[in-house]
Length: 230
Ligand code: SF4
Image 1 (cartoon, rainbow, N blue to C red):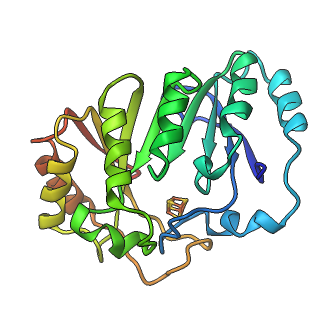
Image 2 (cartoon, helix red, strand yellow):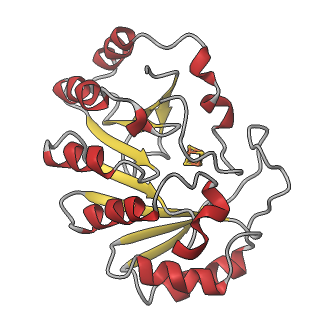
């Protein structure tokens, strides 16, 4: 598997850093509200040459601070650790976006100091996780393991939830609070409909309700903030 797309400059995807984003194809979740749906089906398109990516990164040294590895689900790329190693050797910070379905690789990347920041999606409360991800072959224990790895605090991290009116309610928010109890940072992201979204019937949670959810979650998590509502 190779990267299929690149965003050459972003001020939004890596907290407080100037970065580029590399996208992997395919994902094992297929969330109905995924914005990267088009990217997920690009696996059959011509991949980007990793050598070209490294050349681009060499030229951007001093301009970019970091590289965000996103997708799709990046940990489906078998040689991701080797590729990240080459990016790190150039001197870049690396952030990983993940759905938490590969705790083994997540642990390896952290233990080998190949990543500097992780953003892990939390899709729903444990009892309703499969309302979103559909793929029942992925045990929730695996997701929980990834959460626990991040909560060991060996690396800077954030959890993030895209709030969907049709999925999330007060009960599920309390359940999520208990799941993430003692964690450092959670962002409640506003859902925004775009052309790439598969299920266009889903809706965002309004700001007032999102603030109420943030208040509840603040009882469990050190820092809870809304993202995208401004
Ligand atoms: S986990 Fe992320 S990339 Fe994968 S389908 Fe869901 S939203 Fe899309």
